Length: 345
Image (cartoon, rainbow, N blue to C red; front, side, top):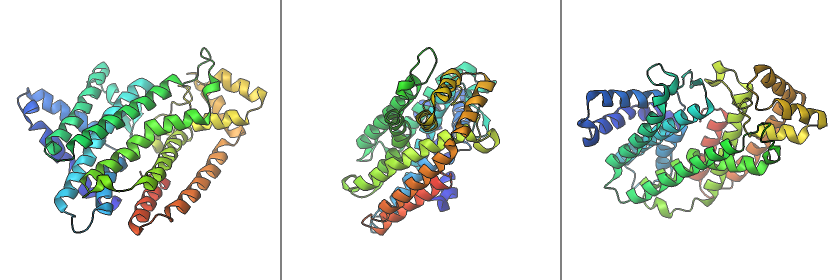
């Protein structure tokens, strides 16, 4: 999948150019085009682009050789960048909600001196640039209606995931630790991460494949759903255990009182005294309180619990992947799993 990253990267300027030369932008004052170009480049910069690259990877792996064309592959790369544009706008909004300071090794978009609170409008602008870019390229394709339906579904699921994450945060005032359970974690991971990271690009790519819509991908999708959970827990792990230089952002999950896999695992292992510490300090903005929660995680060896859980899950997934009916399907899933394992997806 990553062997063609340079070819994938080369398509972004074309997407931006197509967008800015469209009637809706061409007649605007030049400041609009300059701002949109800056916005897209900034909010897509520095990402791993795994979601976007998954679209051409799907086309390459699942298209029948007799129907395969370089033109379709190029369209898949274009569509992949559209998904990355959408992701960029959603991440920019997420950073505002979380009051984050860094993203992908640079200040969050809304913290730029020339942005500020207008970053909220830019999130909407970025999202609609994404849908406009999709329309400009694919409006006349027979699968366009299916593509737009898919987009609406996946963005809705992502918003639901964000809603769950926000509504299930812990505060002492809410006293809602009863919601910190694996059922809630699964709901957040499914909606916020799994749908956008895997279902969206997989089904988008299949729309470009000849008769791809009719293809039975039930087991592949089930495996990808588990990939999404791993990705969510991996992100939770980075937020707690990685420093800014390694993760490209400042972790805020503990201070924000977020419901994470690590918080749930800690609560399952806490004695009464440790649970009192969790209730007192989790969700506090005080750096010393955050430090105490991390100390509690260390006392409970949650990092080790995660390592064992992750390794067991990878082993189970590999066993399922090797039972897939075709070599292409097996290679497809194994390559994605390896990218997740190496944390480059």
